[in-house]
Every structure is written in C-alpha cells, then in structure tokens.
Length: 396
Image 1 (cartoon, rainbow, N blue to C red):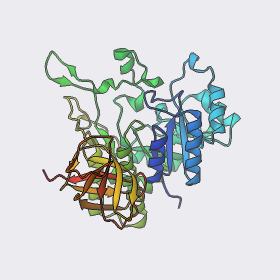
Image 2: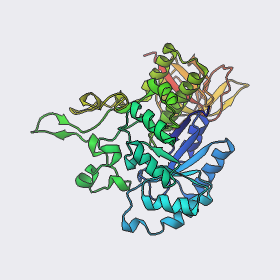
Image 3: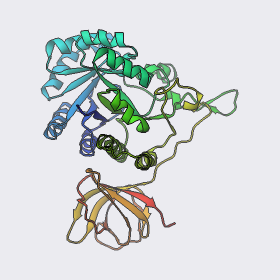
Image 4: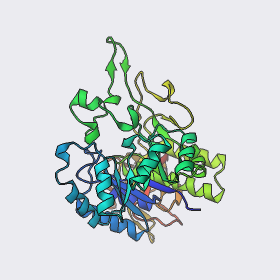
C-alpha cells in the first residue's frame, strides 16, 4: 500500500530545508508571482532550483502555487514564468485557473497539476470533470466532511489532498472579499489582510470578529489514511521555523506510528500536547465530522497567546566538550529544564547547569534574542544543524 504524503508549507529556502529534514515528504512554495501569499518571502527562480535540487536529493518533491484569481493583466508573462519554473525542476503546480491547467498539461505533460482548494471542489462529479481535464490531484475544499471524502475517493480514484492543520478562512475555501472592501487589498490575488481577525465594535460595545479557530485533525489521521486520502497538507507558509519543525515532526511521528500500529491513545495525547505548545489560537476539527457552527468561531473576540517556549536553533555541537552552539530566541536561565530535539525525531531533556556567551564567558541568564550562546549538554543523541531547543519548565 502506498504511504500517505505529508505536505508542508515553506515560505523561504530555509523553511523548505527544515520541513523536509523534519519529515515532510513534499513542500509547497510560492514564487514571486501568482501565489496567494504575496507577503511571504517567497522564492526567486534560483531559489526554486536550489530547493528542488535539495528535495530531490532526499527523494522528496516540491510544488509551486499558481492559484490566484487571474485577471487580464495577470496573464502577461505567465507562460514564460511557468516555463522558467519547469526548468528549475518543479514536480507539480497547484492551480485554480482553467487556462493555466490546460496550458501546463498541453505544454509540459510531464509536470503534475494539482487543483487548488481555491476551486472549492466539494463533489465527485466536479472531481471527475477535472480528471478529464488532466488534473492529477484535487485539493478538496476545506468544507468537505470525512464521509464525503471517502465517497469522492471511491467514486473517482483521483488522488485527494486535504488540509489537516493550520489557519482556516471564514469565507468558502478562502474565496474572501473582506480585504478588498476594508483595506483595498485583494485576498484572491495574494493580498489577504486577515480582516476576519480584526476586532470590530458593535454599537460601541465589546469586540466582534469573523475569525475561525485553527484546524487540527491530529486525532483523525488514521481515519484519513484508511479512507484513501493521498496527501495530508499543513497550512502556514508564513509560520516560524520552530512552528514548522514541531508541527511537521509531530505529524511525521503520528503517521509513522499509525502504520507501525504503535499509535496508542496515551502516545497520541502526548503528541497533541506537543502541537498545543506551538499553537497560539484554539483549535477545532471544523467540517470533518459535522457542519461547522458557533463553537468553531471567535465571534466575541479571541485570545492569541505569544509562545515563549522556543529557546533557540542549534548551529553546531562540540562532542568533545559537550557544548551546543545556538542562536537564542527567548529568555532562559540556569536551572531551567529544556528539551533539545533533532530533525530525526530524537530528543533529550536536561537541566541547564552551564551557559556561556560567544566569548565563553559564564552566564546565569540568556536574555538577548539572536545572540550566539553555548549550553552544556551531555547527550547520546546525534545533535545536528537545525536541531532546536524548547523550554519544558522554568525554575521561576
């Protein structure tokens, strides 16, 4: 049986490398044109080529988004741009426009076309229609239930991709016009201002928002595998390295344990707690098992927690002296309990007993983000570049 794909977002080249090292089977990225995350760093053609080479050496794939709502002025140069991206070694395009689908399939038949969730596909007849147009995979609308997914897969045999984690859009599968009306920014051409998360006043009283809770389907990965879903997609091209490493690493473990029959309820609870440590909003399963309702929304305002658990990213490890060199991100001190985790999934917890600055002066506290520090850790795990540290318990 073909194993399910874990698909990660990557807002830049470093995120692409990190997510693949932490267990993603493929990444989706945006170029400098035609994607729905205009405010992300996004990829130049040279970076797309480098990213594809990095992924392919690992036996993994890279997909590029071309899923804006195209207007007449957007068509100038699009064919040349697609040809340039194909030359970089891209594995698939994520597309919503019928002309773009047709052009890619006729001109570059060796490259896959994945239908974007922006097309709001919710039924098997639509999937069959796009199959006839040459589409290789359909990213279903986020409003499709588990039961409907199973029916669509049974009826069509088409590869199906679904979102399992991350932010949700108030409007149907992201087709939002709120940004256009409120900020004069077109969400369907990459300019979403997240107006749904603005706090509005109703008759001068308490805040009102249109915002949804985040999506989290960790409990149902086994069911998604069982019904025949091809790819599990995580949202978040503008998320941090720490967020992506934690989320992708956790879903990698959930998937692998499910196939190995070691995903017990206790283990899943631990893994869900790990996901919760990087979440800054409440979560829901939304449409998976029922119609979405008020319990999935933040109608009366929301609380977003700023996560301070992330302590730093490893630069190198001196095995002889047991010193980890790292970039610091958040305050910690001698006596705190921290966890160091690696791209391969290994992790070790320890109490900080020795801490040094970049000149090897002994410290009690690391308090300056982006500075280089050293911490002593005697470890039997393989601490490599892109390993990370998080706070487990503060002594305070």
